[in-house]
Structure formats: structure tokens, C-alpha cells
Amino acid sequence: MSVRIDPPMAMLAELTHRCPLACPYCSNPTELLARDAELSTEAWADVFVQAAKLGVLQLHLSGGEPASRRDLEALVAAAREAGLYTNLITSGVGLNERRLRALDDAGLDHVQLSLQGVTAAMADRIGGYDGGFDRKMHVAEIISDIGFPLTLNAVMHRENLDDLPATIDMALRLGARRIEIACVQFQGWALVNRAALQPSRAQVETAKKTVARAVESLRGQLVIDFVPPDYYSDFPKACMNGWGSTGLNVTPDGTVLPCHAAETIPHLTFDNVTARKLADIWYDGSAFNAYRGTDWLPDLCQGCERRDIDFGGCRCQAMAVLGDASAPDPVCRKSAGRAALDALLTEEVREVAPPEFVYRR
Amino acid sequence: MSPEDVPFLPRGVRTQFDAVRKVDVLLGPERVLVLDQVGTAVLGQLDGEASLSEISEALAQVYDAPLDVIAPDVVAFVEDLRDRGMVHVRPH
Image 1 (tube, one colour):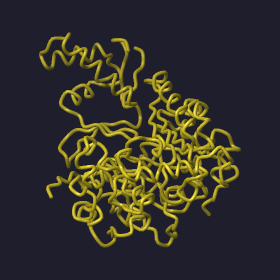
Image 2 (cartoon, rainbow over the protein chains, first blue to last red):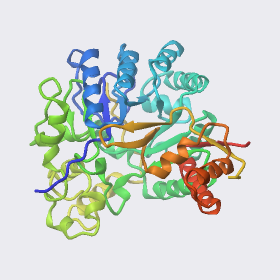
Image 3 (tube, helix red, strand yellow):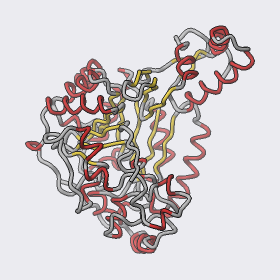
Image 4 (cartoon, rainbow over the protein chains, first blue to last red):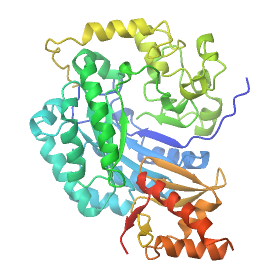
């Protein structure tokens, strides 16, 4: 085993699992952590200092809804003090002008605002929260007034993918510098709603063309990042840019994960920042070393020219679809598991009405 | 972009010395770029006043290199960063 372990660049801090929205596509685990399990302000601040010393540069403050933490402003200040670039990932619900100005004073670098739809009817139906869209639009105005750089994170699926042109227009109208067109990834709660959320192949092809045109016509004006629905891809995504290579995740109670969904892999055990130093966890934690590098990869991947491009893809997807976290990601056309994925697509994407959403409440 | 355009780092983009990796980095929304010496030198000239052509001239002097070698590199570097949203450009 001769894996060189580089320091991590990015950390996702899931400050809380609490969230006013009930999105069917939520990628958080089906079992959520309660408020009294959450790390304290001081514990998070210590994690931020440890992360910066370890080499983390970018901190993503997420949830749940991070604004559900009343100490969000103090957490941002602590992260900036530690030298981290701070990105707030929010639905906007729970923020107002006073809090946004306090976040500005605390040194918040960037806001990523999620978008469930371009109309109140669609957005509030997806979010399961009446009035959420209007509040979000109001928050977007204040973000623009303050001057925070804004990314619109448009979560796309079967119900709203046809609204992609209007979604890109909305990013421009809100003054966003960047849009992330994030087709739903099927992890956590989203798996429950996969059949209702999975777009059709025709929708995906149209979306790809829309994105390609927008990238050209908006060059220098709007940065566009596209996360395609990966069941329709021929090769898997390089999940986490390689397990344990670039990023780490801390859950609300301080559990440290190699990726957001890693807890779905039953044989892994995870360390917690309340019991072990973050650097030890990164370099020596058993979960981080389980799929680090390429030595563990199956023969199919070892002989593949894409071995060092996608590292066998997503472990959690192999677990979810095949029940085997060590298998090649079933998205891969070369893998035996692809048949299972194709069978799911055939079964779930039909021209009939999709099943009703199961809201997360 | 025109040679008279003025590039600048917009709010939310900043350079920082990465004490762990011992390199200069450019940090922005969802982006980290490790800067080499040239990158650090070019970004060091972005003061919100200097135009692209003035930046090239200044660097040609500092490095005692021909302007027609420096200028295309500066334009390509700035244009690439602009496309990634890490540099903004305003007319002179």
C-alpha cells in the first residue's frame, strides 16, 4: 500500500439536520440527528481551527438549514478567524436583513442559495413549505444589496428540468455570478422518491443542449456548473474527487465522513471530533482508508484507462443499487452492475404519471 | 477583452498564502486555484486601476522580458480567470 495522502482542501460542515423545508430530494440520511445531539458553538470553532491547520481552505456551511442555528453568525466569524473561506449553503428561509448584515460583518465570503423552482407554485410544492419562494426572493434581493457573491443552486429533476431556460434567466435576474445546475443525486431521502424524481432521457438530452448553449452565450457573465443525472451517463463521476483525497464531511454531532452519504455503508465505522483529532481521523481513520487510492479497486477497474479519472465511481451508489460498496459504480457501462441500473430506469421512468412525493417531515 | 480593460478581483475572491502547502492560492466561490510564480506576479498587479496593457508593461519591466512575449500570457491568464468567475473586468 503506497497511497500518498494529501491534506484535504474542503470541508462540509453540516451544522444541523433541522430544516423548515421538506424536499423530497433531500440527500441527508433517512434518520436525522436531533437538536440536542448537535455540536456546540465552541466545538465547531475548534473543528474549524483544526481543519485550517490540516490544510482545509474552503468551508461549506450546510445542513439541514444552517440558518436554523442561532449561532450561525458566530460560527462564520470563527471560521474566518481560522483562515477559512466561508460558503453558506442555504434555502434562505430563516434569514432576514438583520441576520444577513451580521453575516456580512462576520466575514461571510459567499452565499449559495438553493432554488426548488422558478415559480412559487413549483418551488413551494417541491419544498413542501408555503411562502418559501417569496421569502427566498426577498432574501436574494438583500444578498444582492449587500453585495455577497451569489451562486444559485438549482436542484433539477423530472418535475422542473423542463424549466431550465427560465432557471438560468432567474440566475441572471438575481445577479448571481454562478449557477449550479444540480440534477438530483440519489442518496439518502431522495432514494425514497427516485421514481418521482428521475428525469426521462429526452429531458436530459434537451437539458444538455440548453446548458451547452448557455455556457457559450454567457461566457464571462455567468459561470455554469452542470451536474448531470448520472444514471444516464456512460461512466461514473469521480465521487469526492477520490475517496479521502480532497474533502471531508462533519455531521451535526461531529461524526467525520469521507463523503456525505458514507453512513449508508454498513461495515464502515466513523470517528467523531469529540473523541479524536481531525488530523488523525483524516490520515489514520479506518473509514478514510477503506477506499482511499486505487489499490482496493476490483480487477475491472485496475485494467481500465479511466482508473485514475473516476476511481471506480461512487461507493455509496454501488451500495445503494448493488448492495456492495466495493463494486464498480453501476453507472459504468463496462460493469456488470449496469444491468441493474438500466432495469431501474426502465421500471421507473415511464410516460405515466410519476408517484406522489414522500415529503421529509 | 481589450488591452484597455481593467481586471480586478471581485468581492468574494482573494489570494491567500497556504501555510500547509507553502503556496499562494486564489480562493473564490467553490474554486481554489494554486498559483505559480507567474500567477502570483500577475495578480499582484491587479489594483483596480491598471489596464491589461499597463499590467503587461509593468511585468515586462520587472522580469526584463519582451512585451510581445509577456502580453499574450497575461491576457490568456486573465481571460481564463474571468471565465471561471475569479476575475472581473471593467472598461477603462
